[in-house]
Every structure is written in C-alpha cells, then in structure tokens.
Image (cartoon, rainbow, N blue to C red; front, side, top):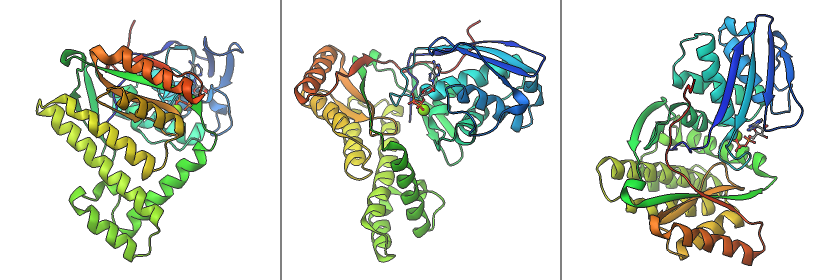
Length: 348
Ligand code: ADP
Ligand code: MG
C-alpha cells in the first residue's frame, strides 16, 4: 500500500518524424543523447537513458507502432535518486504518460504501469515488482493506494494525516549497501519456494488464520528455516496491510497505524532480513523519542524509512534521529515531511 510523494519528475515532449529519440535530463551531465527507436535493444544501456528508452521500447514491443516516429524528451526531477523512493519509476511513468498523450495511444494508467514495469524488468534489466510504477501512475492526493498485485485491483484509501494532526516523515539514510541486488533475488526465490511447497500461486493466497498450519506444513515438507521466515513475513505483512485498510476505511483511530508500522519493521528486520543498522536506528530513535510508529520502506539494505508522528512532535523526532545518527558515526540523514500527493498528471 504505497502513497505518492509530493516530489515530481517532469517531462516536456514533442513529436518527431525521423525515428529518432532525443533524451535530455537537467539532472545529469552529458547533454543530449540520441537513439534510434528501431535500434533499441534490451539490456544494452547501462545509463539513465535506459529508463525512458525502455518505455519507448516497451510501447513499441506492445504494438504501439506510432512511437517509432520518435520524440524529443526533456526531463527534470525532484525525486531523490537511489534513496529507495523510486525515482526510476517516476521517470518511467512520466515518459509513458507523456507519450500516451503525445501519440494518443489511449492506454489506461494501470496499463502504463505494466509497460513501465516491463521496461524496467526487460530493458533496464532490474527485476522489480509493479508497486512503484502503479503508485506513480495511479495515486491520488490525500489517499494511499491499496493494490492487490494478483489481479492489479486497486482501491483508493483516504489517508489525510494533516487533517488529523499527524505528519509523516521520510528519513533518507543516504546509504545503499552494495549487496542489495543479489539479496533481492534470494528473497524472491525463497518466497517462490514457499509458495510451491504450500501449493499456492502466491503467498498472498495463504490466509493469516492459516499461518501456523502453513509453517508446520513447510517444516514437514523439509523447508529450511529461512523459507519459513520469509513466508511468515509475507503473510503477516499482508495482514498488517489489511488491518491498516480496515482502520482507514472505517474512520477508526488513525494513530493505531503507528504500532502496525513498527511491527512491520521488526518483521522486515528479523524475518525478511532486508534492513540494515542505519534503518534500524531510524526506527529505534524515532520510536524512543515519541513517534507513533516507524518502518523502513523500499527494497531495504539502505534507502529510506517512514516515521508517523503527531504534528507537534515532528521537529523533535526528526532531530532525535539526526542526533542518533551523529552519535553512531553515520552519515547525516535527510529528513523531510511528506503528504500523500497526486500521481502522474498532465500539467500543460
Ligand atoms: P530509485 O528508483 O530507488 O531512486 P534506482 O537505482 O532504481 O533507484 O533508480 C535511480 C536511477 O534512475 C538513477 O541512477 C538514474 O539512472 C535514473 N534517474 C532517476 N532520476 C533521474 C533524473 N532526474 N534524470 C536522469 N536519470 C534519473
Ligand atoms: Mg528504482
């Protein structure tokens, strides 16, 4: 269940007729990059241009031949890069939305998200899920997005923290531990193994009420401890999301989300094992200084955490986290408040 940050990636686009794509980002050095649409090849580009080029490739590969005419694309973004906040999805989705308009492709937002995921998986070569792209494409202001990746069904869940006197802080630890990519693959393979042993299509199909029985069954089937931990994380995490959805939809006490966030962090740390000392310290320092709850977000091994606080505690909790980082000898984190904002849109 993601929500969109107020940060934006912006694309200015125009049509061409000569089959050339010209890409420029005001955020990277190196000027304009020119590519031919008919020469785009998956995993051939290790630069930033792979993200926008991948979207064009994915559109063309899905049969939208009109994009072969080419385009001029200028990009600029305020989304922190490599901070676990999905600057890559922001870049992909803004390009997809702009080309959808420019070439009148008539694709719906969830379809654009799928094409962007394909661009990232196949063209860039990063095995990501579809949540970030869907968040960029489909989130609306004042809402979190309840997404079921089994069938891509969505529900917009009212999530207006400011109205209830709360704030959500994002803490970018500014670290990225180098082993993150291989570890992602291992977690994924472990989850697939668990699903296979439990004879379900996805772990999402294991009901929370059946978790103990599922863990026993896994042990009986010879699954190692790691697979059982991964399964326990996924099933309890799905249950936490459902609890939060119920809370928000019933107009219940939104503050009760806090401990659910912190429980989620413990599960990511102890069962899924994708946290790191910096992320653990954000959560510990935030909760110790009075936050309602906190957890890491994104793929883990660095990146960012989110912290739910009473509005009047926001500054104090942010400072406590900064001080804890100083005392631990870690690089100073970046702390900012985020309101659930609108996803991709046309601005001109
Ligand atoms: P995250 O998505 O968590 O920010 P990724 O490694 O998936 O991290 O994506 C970051 C990459 O996306 C950058 O290294 C760069 O290649 C590309 N990128 C993001 N924003 C921009 C931008 N404004 N201009 C050019 N490239 C960008
Ligand atoms: Mg990314």
